[in-house]
Amino acid sequence: MIFIGILASIAVIGGLCWLLFTLAVFALPFFAGVSAGTWAYQTGAGWLGALVVGLAAAALTLGLGQFLLALMRPLWIRLAIALAFVAPAALAGYHATHGIVKHTMPSDTWQLIFSVIGAIAVGITALIRVTAMAAPGPTRQNVARA
Image 1 (cartoon, one colour):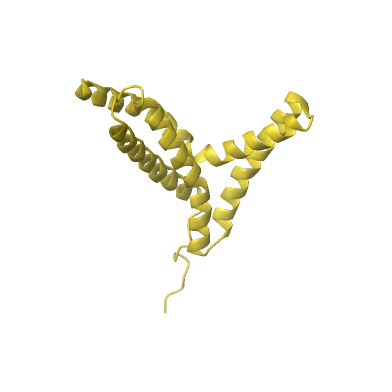
Image 2: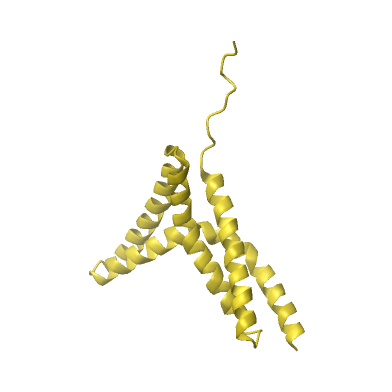
């Protein structure tokens, strides 16, 4: 029975990985948008105002992240910006994987193991996608040779 649970977990995780990996980069802008929209709604903006504020905050967060990745040259600053996008993605990957395996795995230990593996996989994928968003560094094609 545990073997079937493991296979079912792998199949479901594999089916949802594409969606999760595709949307993982947008976990930070989504969180910022939901937080800003919730704040706007609670301060009396109404549902339309909350939607506009949430979308604006999400777009601003994503745009600012891409702008800073393209503008900043020190590697440690770019790494810090990338980690700001990767940490919520890894956390979302952990919880998404845990939500799947808790229904198919009876053992808490195996649930934790699969959840951590899911978080690592989503985090690495988000890091690769975030670094791909950054502009490439300067090339040496136009450098005169002596």
